Image 1 (cartoon, helix red, strand yellow):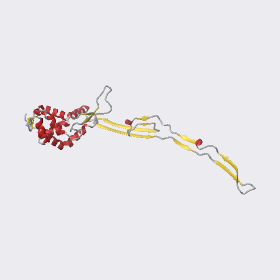
Image 2: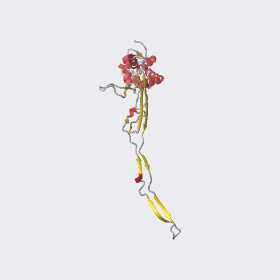
Image 3: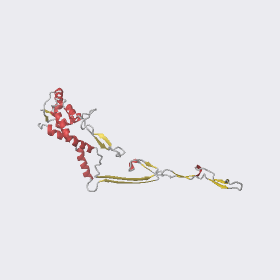
Length: 259
């Protein structure tokens, strides 16, 4: 066996975690590498309305450094003289540290992924009730057009005394055309508008004939939990780390607890 700080001093921890956490993708990615959490950092103008997702994951080299900082005085099984010795063991699948990191991830990957998912949820530590209902109704009519065709000719025919064939005796024509006798009805839309974030359908609306919107918000605590208790619970949540959970699972099968 060999102390973990000796693994680190011989530059062996990095290749062990690199191989153990590798997801075999191209380009290369590693477990715990791509984790993002929603953050709203206050500015001079106050708290921004939108969340920004910032990377909070760890590279395999960072994980190796953190592990050595917390468990450097403990032992791992097997002894390696140098990186060549380690690489030979990895190539022959006989490196116990790599094999157990892989096994730990295979057994617990669902747990780790769901815990990572929870870190991506937007939440306010002072709200234990957070609900929002949007209702909207808009009516908008286009121009309505009515057309009356009055281009009509009235003809009166009579039979004169000297023939049996009727002949035209009188014609009355209403002059004009359909285009000249058109009636147009147009709706005058109001200038009110609703931005996309305040509309139930998420679209900006302008110039409707009529618009009705309701927005109901339920936020804050329900009165049975103090603000200080909510803040304390949030602090406990933020002090927890998925990486600590991984280290705990890994140490159960790999760490030799001798100082």
